[in-house]
Image (cartoon, rainbow over all chains, first blue to last red; front, side, top):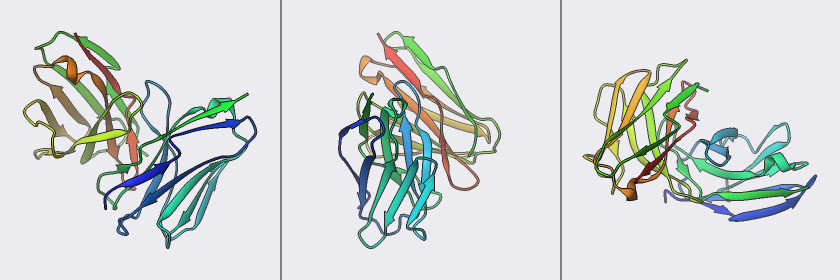
Length: 111
Length: 114
């Protein structure tokens, strides 16, 4: 019940395309859903996060879509660029408690 | 979110020695910090939750006598890998829980035990 399932494991997108990564969770007590971007040899950096009272949040080229009834949330990267090539992790937590991470998605944007 | 500094960024040590990794919250008094371990091409695995002024809470399967965590102040938590062995070689990352319950990660420490 504590798991967050992330897909796909890897993704190749053409420059300018849309990258879509999906996550699903079981624990309905989760109330914080962030997405992190990680480059090799670096710690994860917060991209965007959402709380369950909102169905969508957009920040620049990054959008989170959240479906509470389906217990799913996804990250959309619009106009994907080679610099977006990284590993992306979804996560979930109950306010003030530890983060539960998805397995990660390796994104490669081809120029 | 908080500003987090982790040091060192990489360390090589001999088998049997101990290594200390520091995690500092530079602009926020963090009562809670987290320590993670990450193997190549894998996700982050939570090792322990570090609470200021009290003992750390370790995740199941993590040896508390091997991975000593000290959170003696609101700005500093340390992870000491004791009697390190090659299988302890990994990427260790700390995280600070900020005032808005967001999480900021350090830049990570690459530990290589030879």
